[in-house]
Image 1 (cartoon, helix red, strand yellow):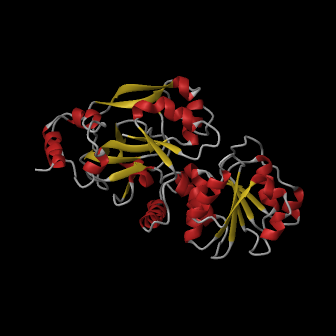
Image 2: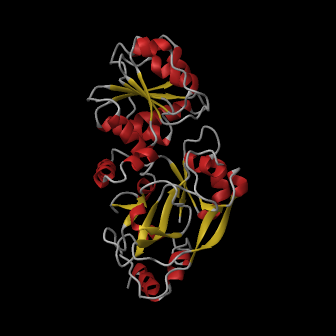
Length: 385
């Protein structure tokens, strides 16, 4: 009998508390739990539900290094329309940091569990749950569920299923950045193969997704990055993903841009994740009637729009927040499902990969948070439970 089968039988006969909070923790085995159980549907004997889990929780807003703590918290019983899930992996995103700091647009009630994104596996379902069954992978439909924990009981309507034939890290990082990139490339300009998109923050998780989705659609991309010691290595990495051109911020203000546009059309769409002077320079290079979409502001400086851009070039300046898009389409099941299916198809084809990730255990959260807040960080910290 295989080792995985023996472990499954032991868990089947054991208590749910052991299964959720201890049975899946990383031990001496060299095979990761998510690999061992990917082929199994774990079902359980009737009895009391799991009662506790480990969570990264904050009771007040402030510096994540100071306010985030690892605690054992209670889990409610699995209700008729809820599901018990085992968390598999959850990244640290800038929005997670902002939410802990208290500077994000939406803030959960305190105390709160950190983490707005991740993937979990369903262990048990309530009697009236129709869309999910044990073994399914699920991700949050929206922000605020708190994914930095080992287990949770969630409402059926708060999660949506994903296929289990995509890589774990791709599933864990699918719901925010690739969805942001997908919508911005879809909703603001009617882009055709051969058209050009320009973006700053090209090495960010959103930027990497933009490069790959655009390449899959036959779009050319001009990708702007800040100068840094490893700029040549980063440039090569982005081009390997499908970037047409990679330039430094200062190049936006140089005559070299005119030479660039002799070989292909000016961009119809600019994607701004920085703000400040960088955003203004993106605007200057748009074709007449084009759009600039702002989804972030890493420079923490306002977007300044020249009057001539509005009057003489008829440029459109808009904003995008994927959380708001999901709220606006909360009653349209097909919109989110269709987007996720298209993204998963790109993943299966090898055309969309997860951003560079560093896998860390939940117990190493202090160092993971510290690294995530460092400047020029291209590697995403991701908790693997």
